[in-house]
Image 1 (cartoon, rainbow, N blue to C red):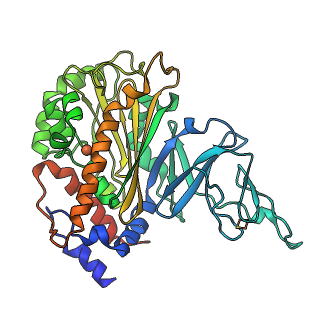
Image 2: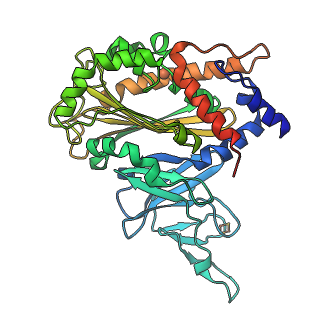
Image 3: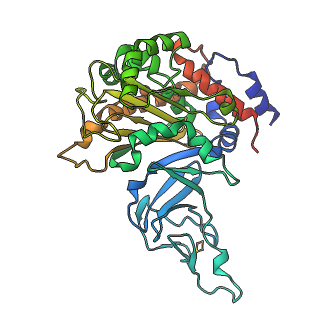
Length: 414
Ligand code: FES
Ligand SMILES: [Fe+2]
């Protein structure tokens, strides 16, 4: 433990993290306790489970959570752990069930989590005491969030507060899933998250993203509000001010939000920004043309991109016509999973109003490239010759991420 504390204390600001942070099991398990299990995690969209009995299983670290719609239409989350002797109950990733029957000794639970049947139990056995263990769940604007804390989690209303206005405007509640894709990644989750906190790599790795977005956006906003040094971001925001004013005059919220110092200390790490895609493009598509019909409260295409980040483990990028949900899951010390879910308006029809391939094009090709560069990063980090290098000025959001990471790691596991 002393060695672990020392590692935290020894980190040199302005540099990448030392090798142990990507290879040491003890660090991984502390990160889960001190950070991951405390966060509100965006896990999916309600349209994945439209009917009573529909469920899916969310897996991260060693945890497995059943998210299921009850007969009362309410969505609940339960640990996928049988209250008899602990077996996994749902072995498939998704499906529809009237009863959740444990495959071991057939204890059977309702979609509301109550134990309904258990054979040969003593007479004084009280079924009502052996329901499934609940996992914290909240739904906001159609997005499902869970919190893996076994205690009272951080206040959801406080967490979602600064992000509400933008999500309400985009009306993610009036959306449905167009398509989804998983990107299994042989790397520590921090390499995945760090990569998403910078667009320094966008020039070399993402020709598609760079041809869709304006160059200045890639430099200053490619990884959210603090992608570049403050003065450069301010210059960019000044330049797009007329566009922002025009959006505001049409009632489109366009203010940026960046986490406060106080928020960082509470484990929060959120941002919101809204900027033009640029190059005359109306959407994040190959040719810049819309890929689907207008969503949310927009009355016309304004070519904007909204970034709403809940924490480094999940965010939504929202254009006028579709939404991409990014879900980053730590699984083990050197394996992570990235899942992307694309939403379109709930009235949009595939083939008529949109083609899934057009909607998913940019972030699919970009995330495939990211998977490759992240895995290459992990391979290099394993080397005995690896030593942390100096971060560039275009990796300010990585510095910010480390700040949040160390603040929370040092705060302990309570
Ligand atoms: S472990 Fe589930 S019924 Fe025995
Ligand atoms: Fe990338």
